[in-house]
Length: 172
Length: 416
Image 1 (cartoon, rainbow over the protein chains, first blue to last red):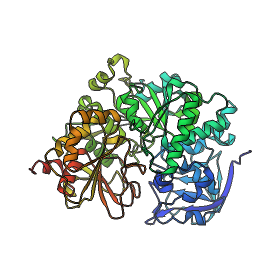
Image 2 (tube, rainbow over the protein chains, first blue to last red):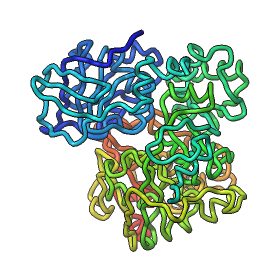
Image 3 (cartoon, rainbow over the protein chains, first blue to last red):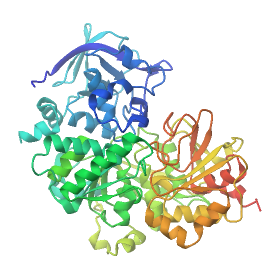
Image 4 (cartoon, each protein chain N blue to C red):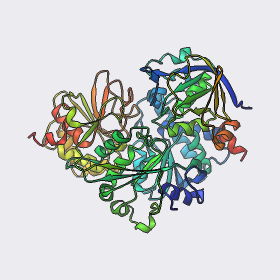
């Protein structure tokens, strides 16, 4: 499967108390009550099922959507489900000020794009605006403005382009 | 310039002369998966593993600890799927009786100082307690480690934290971990390796080191490495020369000191482990349940201390006390020494070994409005049920169970 390095989609700006939602842990993304699920297609229905204000996310999300959050997105457990639930819904990418370390790896290994945009103000983007991400350069375009995020590392980019860690390994 | 502890461990495991920022493929000494995500590891290997899904059988094993024995059919199905895969591939399973995988790995001395361990448990960085590398990873990474014995890793930058002074009597490793969470929150150490020094860690027991390192995940750190002290070296029966230490001329990204002189017991209130207060400021909070156990505070030392505090006392009317030893070996020792009887006689419930409360485990969850004091490591909203979970050490947990409200161990000594 050829992978695009430019993605365009509708942006969900996750907000808590007027600020970009920070410290969204894996139990808020994908609650431990559903950890026994192993079929990725069945994980979509639980995405953000324990995130205050966004429990109806799965009903409203559309394929192609992009998610924006604050600091330390995906902290907590090692569950791959917290990445896979977005893939199941067709969510294209997550942008955050920073990511939990394990989450970052899990996303990279399953070929799910994440972009870090450190220190951005909470009102930089508007709810449901369309943004364009360039995964190679880390640049995010919103209307007439563009913002420089951290580009993917070489390994991350190669794994993403291959479609995941195992697919990447086959080419090694 | 010298190298940090993590740079040295990774350099000796295939990363050659690596430095922070390098992306290296490291050799993994111990490759594990647990009952949660283990079935997905099996699924990945069935899909991508080909004819030889396991690189080295003796270094690869499963540990069941989340939900033991399974109390839901999906968990039971996953455990059985793993057992069948393990039998077919001649892999060891530490089954539902064994206890918490991260503790089994240390107890069985797989994770010696300087080694590398990965598994599907975000608290596998507990290996930092013995100066070893450990890391929780998702099922894709772990399947890859099972098949090839390697994972890729971006060598993190290291921060040195020196704990100055000696805490007050009655203050435990957990309180020191909470003091670190209060100071650093979940952002300052995010994505970094931490090395912890100071007089307290030089004399800490292995169990104390386990407790302190287990909270690295909640600090956002990759790992909290404690250079092996005499207690840890004795446990493994090795000398300093056989362990790995940072070079003396190493420059760290940051060099912090944290004053723990006279530190009093702390407690993390909902909704996060970084929301830390002195126990003395929360003594008006009534308690419905107390959980003692988990990879953070479920060792023999922890439960022995709990038993000693509960001996001859009673849990307050209407309060549930749930106790879960970390491993079967811990259980056996507590049983043989009569310590389980102290807990039982005080009114506690003692469950079989395992994680217990954190992943919908065998000891049950909290209901709406229920206040729980837990010796575990996470109190995020919804994590341990619908109730409000406070995180504390053994002394605070035991005292709160007896007094029916949040209380420090000092107050317990006034009862009886």
